[in-house]
Image (tube, rainbow, N blue to C red; front, top):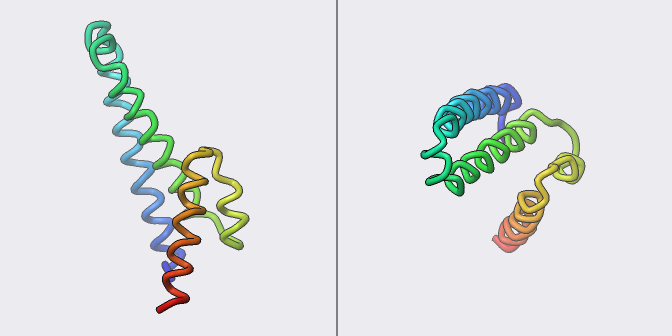
Length: 95
């Protein structure tokens, strides 16, 4: 089990990294040629930052796992997490 203080510290690290990535994407998008040539990559950076913030929120959250996962607003991430949780739980039960 992850120590709650460590979970919060890791969440803070993710948020700090998210700010760095967001600033980088903003700087790159400020140049029309860069924006035009790398729109898909900049959108991917945005997706990464959204995912990092969602993971940070999960690390900070308390309560049952089901309730924490239900609060994930990125639908595809929530589906992946639920699928992985089910798979890992089954693997642990079989071990």
